[in-house]
Image: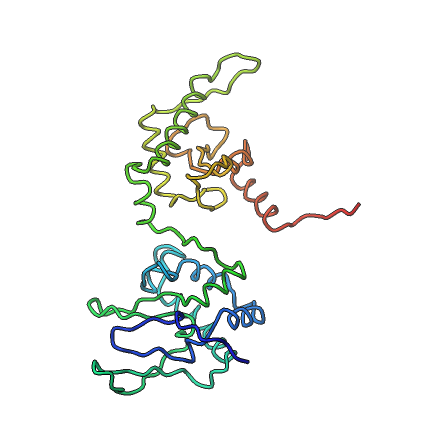
Length: 301
């Protein structure tokens, strides 16, 4: 079994550590073969870490602790990364035909070889970069691994948003698109409140809020605390699409409560809001689980 050279599958090191041909030769094909033969290794923990990890060519290197925190929240140890990656890396290297841990070669400034240094099994999955100033190792996924996981639909191109990602998008609502959506949601709630208890063909339900500016502040705060994710389905809220079903909307957690106050509102996709309707969050998530997993009876005609 042979695979074509994939030079972009590695990165230069400040300490003049040379690329390892054994690892550079790994391509998307061998990663695909491995995971298709070992699907059990695509555990929930491993997949979440791969989704949260920086990916070439644009994302910068990060520490394992940062990746774990993005994937699982505060309190998650970097050991979670070490254990999850090690569980996959060594079997993969054996599958790829490595009889021993690959070795890297070091060179002096003059280009003279100054010896070999063993890698670690996880070198086959990720690039390491030494942050000399802060004395820490930084990580980024290898391109071939990323492409294989994308083809398997185990991960998506979008990275899990960090607090900094969200802050840059919603701070003071400086983004025109977000501002427009906030204004739209405030106006919609205000119209519902102003028309409450009025008799038309039906009696509109009674509603109240604490004022437009207070509501605006609450909505902006929710965007930030929810990391721009729908609180019902967990998907990323969309601001630049013509599909109104993906637009953010204000939902009352307790539909029986008539107030649009901080304790009772969250931001959800318009489609999720419509689906939840007057029902509870737990009832919505029960429906969502069945809809996503296809847990239904198929009838043939």
